[in-house]
Every structure is written in C-alpha cells, then in structure tokens.
Image 1 (cartoon, rainbow, N blue to C red):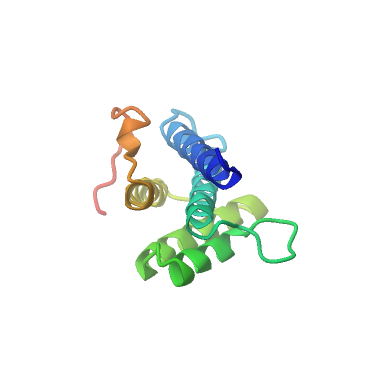
Image 2: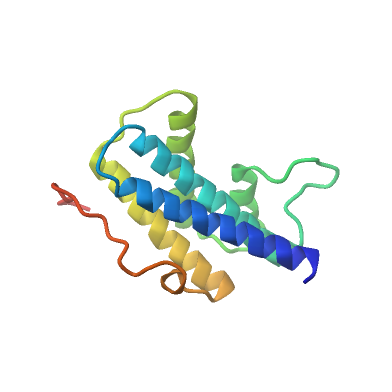
Length: 158
C-alpha cells in the first residue's frame, strides 16, 4: 500500500479510536475529569479525521518546509477553504469545540451537563457525516449501534 493511503488509514483509525474513547468517557458514571476528557478526545478525533481527509485530498498535511503537521486551526482552514469539505457552520461547530478543549487543557472551566451533551452529540453527528461524505464509510459499521448516553436527567431543550 502506498505511504499516503497508509497514512490516511492510520489517521482515520486513530480518529475513530479517539471518538470511541470520548463516547465511553461521556457515558461513564462518575465525573472526575469527565468533561475535560470528553472534550480532549473529541477534539483529537476531529484533528485526526481532518488530517486523514486532507491527506486523502491533497497528499500532505505539512506546510512546505515545516517539520510538524498542520495544527487544528490550519486543518479547519484547509478543510473549508481549500478542499471545501467543511461548511461554515461545521467549521463553527469545530471552532467552538476547539475553544472548549483549549480551556480544558490550559486552565479549567465548568461545563454544564447540557453543554457537554450538546458538544458530544454535535461532534458525533458531524463525525458520522464527514466519514460518510468523504470516505463513504458508516460509523455504525465500525462501532456498535448500541452507543447511547443514559442519564438520570436527560437534556430537555436542544
């Protein structure tokens, strides 16, 4: 298998693993580090998925002469403006996730259960859409259909 295709597969695999970890942590019954971990793993899932998409479409995730691959903001820019994979609204959703993740990593924030649920559900929905749209793969064929958040207080208003 050519290196580019192998990289795309590896990036996509890591994206799915991080998404599954975000879902698992979201569904765990205790709160210690829960909101931070969900945001961190969800963010990582998207960074890897966007890099897989960009690598698939352009053959690279590195700026000319740069040692490190694109950061999250650059991935958003390329995905929206160069390869036209993200809409303005999808980019906004991921920019909000990026801001929450930055705060969770570099300081701290109180994230309400409703906000965490909305962030997680929007993330899973967008991930499913991108995986299908770009790679013609269904997440439901990769992870079990039974993934469902169960709560003593489900969100009432979306």
